[in-house]
Length: 108
Length: 250
Image (tube, rainbow over all chains, first blue to last red):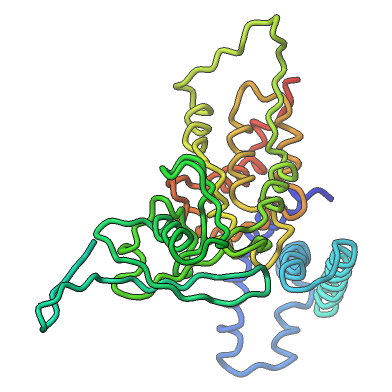
């Protein structure tokens, strides 16, 4: 994939993540006020299409954003060559997407 | 030359302590004392050391007036053009410490190998390619067009490698092409005569290209001719979104 494409993808995914993170953190602050239980979480998420859509977008944006940033960090801070760095970034993308999606569907 | 009178009524000449790197990658610091003058540049001091103390001292200079970009060195920890840097500006009353530019291989004493720096220009696609022959009329370049004004603002680079030496990203990733080459690529992207803009952009935005810049701005801070390479790199990054100027005319 071209560097230009990755650069644009990371900036756009950051723009998507910014408001989502604010909502996510706000939700956590609200949710933990009266104590946090599994029942309380599931009552909010079970069958709720809006929250599922919200977190699916969140997971997709994070899965795009984080591996590109990690790729740059690996380039600057390790002696790994580009093929190894790209492989690790691709692995992180698959991991984040897979784990994130499974978490969203687990509580839907 | 600064002189003062001691309690015995004798005239004393003020001296300046100078510490200079001798050797290549492996070397040592050598200390000298030269006359402290009212007006002296760092290059004047290096020349005086070579002429009066250390004939074998290697250093590089040519024009002595801030045009050729040959005499850049690290002075008291910061990259500077030594021919236009006054000693008092960098030392106060302390020692003058001079070593080769950072981020480049040291050859001997104050001379570093500029080949890695020059190579970055090729890597960043910073090579002009015109599309007209001598039998065709030259391009008309409108000096007031926005693109030409952007190119003009970045054009006066003297290739001194001060920005390359100042850049922390280059320091931890020697494959990064660095500010000077990307600044040059930016001028070409804004040059209507350049017919390989898509190729220049692809190279400037290639691996270890302008996407690696952290926008720390050391290049802007230390550029002796007050260019804004960080601004040029930001311009290339903006082009990644707009894509408007990225096309080959050839």
